[in-house]
Image (tube, rainbow, N blue to C red; front, side, top):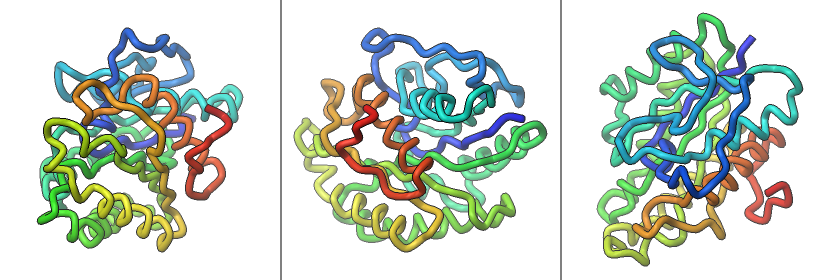
Length: 237
């Protein structure tokens, strides 16, 4: 049986790390959903744009495999670059597609959790204050639609580098988004927050670079495996 994980959010979940910057990961026990069927994982896993590259899911899956012997893990890629929480709204196209993909995956897998990374698009001051309320509704609705009230969500924080780039002023409220994600994880017994402290970016200072995505995935696994918020100084990295 495949143990599956839904990938949702925007470009840093899809992955924009440069493929040539890290060694490839190949493991026939790591699968990805394509056309409703499980295929052996190759990167980019979440091909939402021609710029798709290394994301965090491959190293998450590798860490999971090291802990789970010969079991198989399946990744359900549904992230879409540049999307806001409003784009992920209930009954919208992205929301419905994610539900549909999970339902296809569940024909021969067990859904074990959701990997979430999103928030850059909501990091302007006029949007960040509503993040917690909107995000709470999305989580509740996904669990309801999938009849999985205790479905774990692993929530990744936004990078500290966001305000340093040419578009930095747009991201000025990213600490509010990070606090909203952490507060939600603290309040929900089945959500865990993963800080992005110390991770580095591509030259655009928006997207995590490939090496940081590998580290981020391990942090995500630590949070899932230990059922608690991840530490930023993860010794497993």
